Structures are given as C-alpha cells and as structure tokens.
Image (cartoon, rainbow, N blue to C red; front, side, top):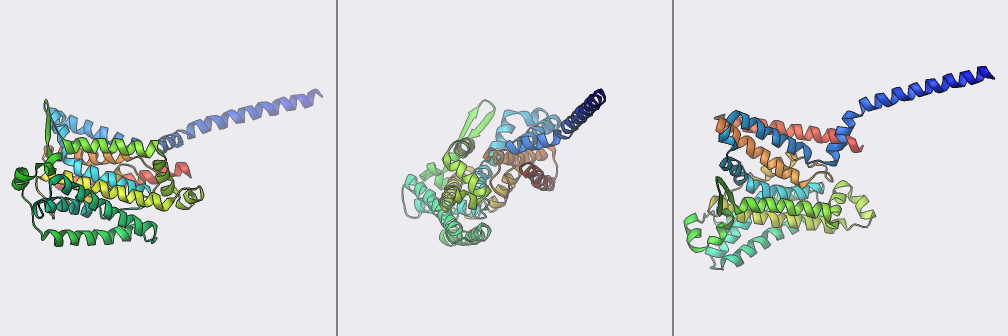
Length: 356
C-alpha cells in the first residue's frame, strides 16, 4: 500500500513538473502571439509607431528645421487632399471593396462647382451643394452596381473612373478657371484654402476639416450600429445577411458616403490650388490606396481603423518633406513608400493569423 502511495506521489510530482515546464514554455512562446493579438485588436498601432519613429528620425537628422511649427503644420497642408480622399477609400476597403474612381469624382465635383458658378451664374453656395450632390450620385451609382447588380468593385470603379474622367474633360472643355477670377467673384470656393496663423504654425481650414472628418468617421465606425454593420459586411457578407444586416443597403450607403467625401475633397482641392482645373488630382486614387494600406486597413475587408489611414497619409507627408529638406532625390521618396506598402501588407498577413 505504501509502495502504491509512493508511486502515486512520484506520478503527481512528475505531472507537476511537466505542467510547470509546459507553462514556462507557453510563456516563452506566447510573447509573439500576444504582440500579434495586440496589433490585431489595435490595427492603427503599427502606422502610429512608424509615424512617431519617422518624425523622431527626421527630427534628429534635421533638428529645428524639421521640428519647427511651420514645418509640422506644412505636412498637414500637404496631405489634406490625400487624407480626405483616403478617408473615403477607407470606408470602401473596409467592406472588402476598392474605389478607383475617387480621384475622378473629386475633380468632377470641383469642376461642377466652378462651372455652375462661372458658366451659369449660379450663386457659389448653391453650386457647391450641386457639386456635393454630384459626388454623392457618382457614389450611389458605384454602390448600386456593386450591391444590386453584383459586379466586382474593382471593375465597377475602374469603369466609373474612365467615365467620370471623360465627363470631366468633355463638360469643362478642358478649361481652367483661374484663381484670380475665383478670388474676385466666388471666394467661397477657396474657403478650405484659408490660412489660420497660430504663432509659427499655419493651418488651413482644409487641414482642420480633414482632422475633424477622421474623428467623425472613427466615432461612426466604432460607436454606431452602421459602423458595426460596415465591419460585419466587410468580414463576411453572407454571415452578415444571415444575422439580419441589410448588406446591400450598407454597401450603397458606404459608396454614397465615399462619393460625398470625395466631393468635399474637390472643394478642398479648389482651396488648395486656388483654381478649378480638370487636370488636377489625377493620382489621388493611387495615393489614397497607398495611405490606406500603410495605415493598416486590410485589403480583405472587415479589419482596420480609419485613423490608421490618417497616420498613413501623414507618414507619406513626413517622408516627402523630410527627404526634401535633406536634399535627397525625389525618387527616394517613391522607393521608401514602396517598401512601406509591401511591408504593411506583409504585416497585415502576419496579423491576420491572430484571428485564424
């Protein structure tokens, strides 16, 4: 009997040691999964870290030339258009779609605002409302084709990009409305270009609007039922429909919101460049996707934080200004941004394993 008890005690002792070893092993092995899990639950953390590090590095290299209030606020001015368009792109990508027409919608909306004011003599406030309505209508058409006709977002928005681009040039007759004319007759069109001086800092209403827009969208996506539905549709549309979510209505609302935001970007573009030009903003679609990808929003949909797109746009702005102040060739900016894009997608793939 005592021999049996002794064997039992030895077994329990061995089991205890084995359990302790496994627990210790799990603790050692569990650090990377914990980091991955943290990044999965806070997707904007990676671009925020990259943004802070890039500011620190350029601050060390350039000193007060980079850390001056003027330089830091200049970054906000430079990325305001891309940032606003990236906010629109973020909504679409969260639904596992993509919008290649955002830049064309932005420019057409600005052209409508300018042409309605100067060609037809319509008061500027009404012309601006017409431009906003135009962008929203373009977004509705995109959303309807994707949700109701079941066409792939890439194909729909690629086609819409060409249609809107052609409409833009045909309607405007490739005519630029000069800054002097706008300033003299319809200064409201340049509203977002108004500069506010705060000491050495110089902010425009466009940059302030961009920041407020991101805060508003962050609230809508995180604190409202609509936001939860956007994530659910992007994660798995069929499952979302089975849970009672009207996925088609969500998709149409997202594309309409994207079109409206792009129209606001068109208004801000007039303020930024001072004129209404049908040839401006041609790279906005690519630049917006760049900001979204660097910002950590998954191209597979359903995961990411809209604030990450703001950080992504700011990262591009920091690299652009920092390298320019260093006197580096502009091609280095494209090279580093390309590396960041590939790195961001690789990190996204790694983080996605946390939910597998």
